Length: 342
Image 1 (cartoon, rainbow, N blue to C red):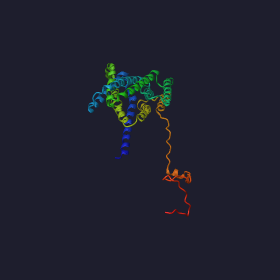
Image 2: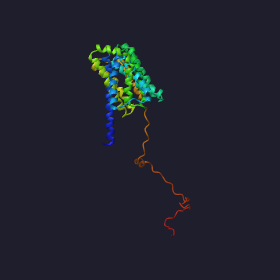
Image 3: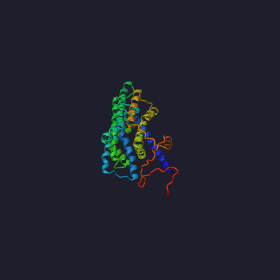
Image 4: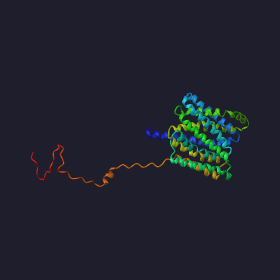
């Protein structure tokens, strides 16, 4: 296999892994909406994180990866509490008040917030395109909030909870970056999920009480959330990210809201209202603007032989009679027809 064929195969495998992640993350919004009718937000988060932690810790044992280094723990703890714990509780609560498609659109301002935090905490700067994207996404969030007046079934509290989930998501991801310098992606993900599970333990009483009354479909949805959108999707995300750039991977998440709308229509028979859809599209447009790059100047075209042939011929000056010879002596022109004696 040639190097070019191997590179194309690796890119295709990374793209397939990213596709698995996007589809599973989109399905999580639909499963949360379905299971949330029988499980409270905290209980649903605890059950999901428990199932995910079991799978990830089992993989850690099989791969024989031990505890992360001490330097990685601050980032793991922060991301575990905010991303795995706070994000999931806020999202579960928010989806009880808004439909799955609207929740996915609002939460997708998370990549924009990550760019803001990166510019502030990681000293990456604030490009003009980033500021423009902020304005567009903020306008989209306002439009989604105003969709309540259209009777789309959303509520201001639900939209606010989805924004809170996006903030927790962004802070958690930024906190993970320093941890990944010292620990493997599997260690950071597994122990972050485990810490999120511990942070949600106060909801254990609700989970035990609700399991007895919830139908089997809701419980299976909870297990599905932990095994697939949490454990498997984060693993395929790390696999794809190690084989491509972060910018290209981040752009794939823009597909999630549209997949959620499609899945909600197929499985839940719900579609966001027109105003909510327009606001969500504005949110996505703002994120796209903030992550886009300006047009790079085209490098000058190299001069080819054809260009040299068509160029105007240059004239050469006649030799100076007084020009010195290589030996340093002046030379004089030799008249035609005369030869010097030898």
